[in-house]
Length: 131
Image (cartoon, rainbow, N blue to C red; front, side):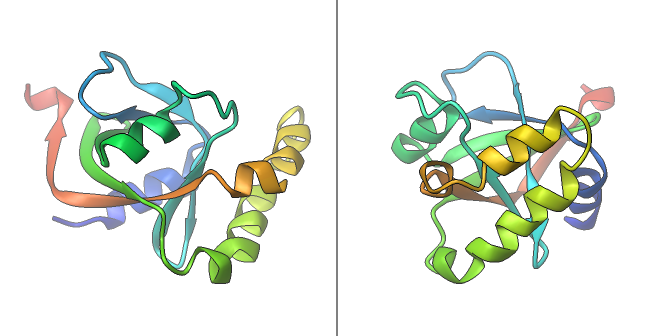
């Protein structure tokens, strides 16, 4: 499967749908960034029932990029410390207008950095138009 379509979608769209595990019926809309052709997301709410904590318990889930749904595996990458500055800059660059500025400055704070996951696209995807 060609991941470039998903990467391009995430680069050019502010809100991307995510579904953690198999217990959630709906997609939650969150911010995601692309760094080194890898997808990253940070938890804003930090709640125990958040998508982040759901992925800690069960790493499989889905992201929705337009009409295409990708199966993903969420991990805490081994090289997260090396990538943190680039991920921070990606958030500040992508979400740099209007009310987003306040949140982009917030999401680069340590409590959110500590809740960063990499989302790895698996080889399965579903085009909703084909269902």
